[in-house]
Each structure stands twice: as structure tokens, then as C-alpha cells.
Length: 112
Image (cartoon, rainbow, N blue to C red):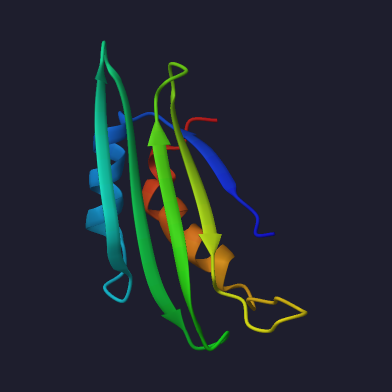
């Protein structure tokens, strides 16, 4: 099972998603985007990216979920699909690298 990464940021979810979309490297392809304004200032959005990693020889995906349903904007990064092999699924750091690209984009807004 891949590891998920979590962080709280000082931006609203719509602003956070916008920054991520602007800052993602060109080789990352946006596959899916969804944003829901639930009213009363509550929002949730999802981005799904895909990118090819030479070191793993495979496409890797990154699911990004941002919401403020508990009062603070929480970002969840879930890398997937970067591993090769039927028995030993090693992604050679592709998932962590993909997730860290989002962390770098949001670094000055991380609020932990």
C-alpha cells in the first residue's frame, strides 16, 4: 500500500487547488478535476495527475484532495501506480517525489 501525505495550509481550498495547478511541472498531466462549494464557506476539491518516471519505468498518479470541512484547509496527497512488479512493488521514490512537488508549491502556506 502506498503512503499518503497530509498537511494543513493557510489558504482556502479553491486557492490551494489553483496554486497547485499553476505550479505543477509541465510533465505532469492533469487527468481529472472536481470542486464542490458546499456553502457556509465549506469546500472540497480533487485533482488527479499522471506523470512518467524514468527511474521506475512507469506512469505514476497523484490524487490531491483539499477540503476545509474541519475548519482548516487540509491537503491529502495519495501517490499511486508508480511501482513495477507483481510481487515486489517498488516505485523507486516516484510517489514521494510526485507528492513533494506539491509540498514545494505550497511550502510557504503550510500551517502546522
